[in-house]
Amino acid sequence: MANRPDGFTYELLRGDVVISHHGRRAVTLRGAAAQQFLADVQHEPQQLMARITGNYKRGNERVAKEHPRNQRH
Image (tube, rainbow, N blue to C red; front, top):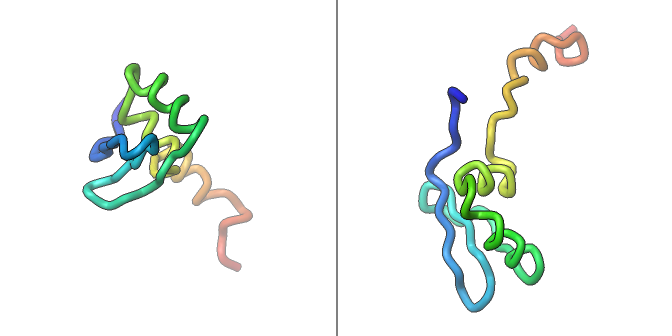
């Protein structure tokens, strides 16, 4: 995988999980979402945090740019 996500960190604050990207708070997870995150974070932490925050490349940006719907007329 060429473009691996990086720069994500998380911390546990009073039962909430705060995810930051390059030092800026991106999202706060509470309750069941926080518990699920803590259970899943051990495997691919950077990729998981990128997916949760929506801050990741999907690999289709070039193709989408060339789609007729995205062309200026």
